Structure formats: structure tokens, C-alpha cells
Image 1: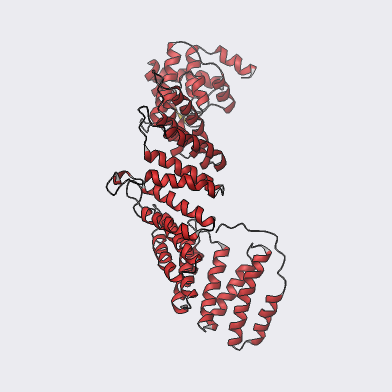
Image 2: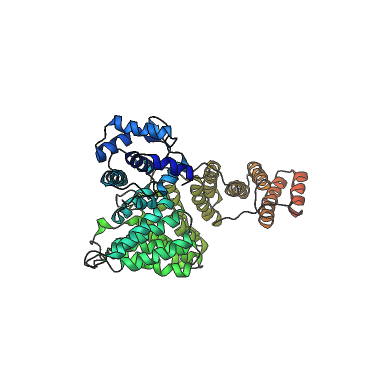
Length: 491
């Protein structure tokens, strides 16, 4: 606190200081005056006129601004929170009342929303009112508001609190593990996947020890095993991820057909099965990956604990099962998996939102399966549908240039294979135009555009347009124009 602020603060009456501290524990701007009226009435028995009198004093000293919506200037709020709060039963009761409202908001109760309060645990600790037993609840509430950075220190407090044990020194390792797990999730949500790994490892180790009576919640343990495996997979550590993911599957899966089926989180189970398949596929083991994707699709079709099915997630597992068969050149067997993937993708995610880019990939692969079997007539409508999906883009309506180029090319190529050259040329021409404006690297650009040019020249010759065909052929052998940008694509 600056010397000038110290002087102003020191001249305030203790009750005014107490009100100022209560106001500082809220976020600014936008603190409703009515909220301050309510908390001061509850804690100190003050009526509205008394509260407004103290507020007028603070306004005169430029410590508080506004009438119905109050605000502390940032430097004032920071200085007050750094200053030891006033002593005395009344001042303490006021801060405790604000804290109770903060916790009620975290629990989803009361008439004040959580964002109205400061989320920094250091402020509540400095106010002398923080209760570590509340930390896990606050952390979850902040995560629900997508405030993972703010939630993390609360889960760290919860971990430390859990390690202290109860009066007999007994530690609830399940609670400790849950806090460690959520701390890991906070890192993941901030894109700090590598930093999340030790938190998930500690969560697994804690949950394996069970609750205060030694009982292990295998569904909770399975969730931490799943998140640890996924974090390792996202770091491309597929060999290291596999044993954790397999353990997650074994932990979550019921022992027999009738055991706890209603309690199984098939969303987590399906995710672990899918990620296991993904790791195996990335390691070049498509044959081993296939049954994992098939099981993932079966689990994904059963939905989350409420029975709500994410059809987009289901589509990904169905698609990957098809890819495993396709990569082994088992096109006839792969086709129905891509067909089912497209049908699922058309139904969208849990909100009904359709990712047209994902849909287009499944439609395109279904077309490829038929094309590879020289069933061009049957393949064409799948490629045409894939093109329509590519033009609509992803879940945000953003069209991927590479996907659009591919779809245009496949429609043109299929038409050319059917001898419908006049229809084929415009699609190939569009594909070439899109490729010219794409950001593919030089080699990939050259390979893609040359194939389109050669097929286009073939169709033009069949149409008797030999001069145009020669121009396309000449262009196909010319060096690629310089490209300045590169594109990193995920398969």
C-alpha cells in the first residue's frame, strides 16, 4: 500500500475499514450495493442507511466508486487485500459472512453468483477465513465456469488438507486422489498436458489406496488411469500410454454381465478403448487396434451415466475401425464401418451440432472403399456427399482447404473413371484452383496438383480438347511455384 493510501486507510473508523475489506473480497467492477447491504445486515446488524453512510465516507476518500453498482479502483482493491484486516469480533464476523456467501455460491446455493467474489485463495487466507475443507468444492465450481487457472490452487490446497488426515491421523486417499486428479485436469484445460502427467500419476497411486476405510472406488480410479493414458498419448508416448489405458479398461469394465452395469461410465470406458486403439494404430499395429475400436464403438453407443450418447464421439470410433480394415486393404469389410460412422456423425454431438469436416471424412472413406473395388457408380454419390460436407466445414462452419481440394478431386476422378469427362473437368479445375490457393508445402502441392492435371488432361483429350489437354500436361511437368507457408496436418 502506498504511503498516501496508508494515511487515508488509517484515518478510517474500524467499521469503515471492515466494510472496505468486505467489498474488496468481491470482484470489481459490478458489486451490487444490495449484496453489501445484505452481508452487513447479516454479520453486523447494520441497516441500509448505516451501510450507505460508510460507503459515502469511502467515496469521499475515492476508495469506492459508483452508487448501485460499486467498484474499488484496482490499486485500492489490491492495497486493501494486502493489508492485515481489522481485528475485533464484528470485523471478523463480517469477513466470515462474506466467505459463507462465497462458499454458498460455489455450492450453487444463495442468490449471488460465484464470479462476484475474488477467486484467489490467498485473499481469503489473508482475511483469516479460508477453510481448507471447502477448497475442493470451490475448485470444482471454478472448473464448471471454465476457470481452470483459478481452480488449480484450490485443488492444491485440497491435496494438502487431505494429506493431514482426520483427528486420528487417518488419510482419505480417495479424496486426496480426487483432488490430485482435478489438479491434473486444470493443467490439461490450459494446454499444459505434459505438466498434468505427474498429477494423474499421483492421483492413481492415491486412489489405489482407497478411502478412509480402504475401499477402492474403481470407477474413479479408472477415470484417473484413463486421463493419465490420454495425457501420455497426446505427448506421442504411445508405448508408455498403453498399459495405463488397458488398466483403465480392466478397472472400469464390470466383472460379469450383471455386475453394476448401471454404474459403468461407458463414456470413459469407450474413451479408454478408443485411445488404446489409437496408440496401437500409431505404432503401426492396425490389426491389433481394430478390436479396441470396435469395442469403443459398442461402449460409445451406450452413452454417459445418463444414457446420453455423443454420436460424434461414436463416429470417431466407427471411423477408426474402418481405417484399420482399410489400411489392410480389406475394403469390402471396411465400408460398413465408414457407413455407420457417417450415419452417427450426421446426428451430431450431445448438443446436436454436426462436424461436417468429420462427416466428410467418413463419407469420403466410404467412397474410397467402393472406388478401390472399381465400383465407381456406387462410389460417386459418397464422394458427392463428402464434397457437400467439406463445403460446410467443421463444427464452427470453417471449411478446410485441403479437405475441400480432396473432395473436388475425388468427384472429378470418379466421373472420369466412369467416362463422364465433360462433368469431370469442372471439378478437377476447381480442385486445381483451390490447390493453387492452398498452404500445402511444395512437395505435397506438386504431387496433388500433378495428379489432378494428368486426370484432367486425360478427360480433355477424350473430349477432343487437345490443345487444353497439352497445356494441362505441360503444367503437370513444370516446377511448382514457390510456396512460403507450410501446413501441419493431423491425420
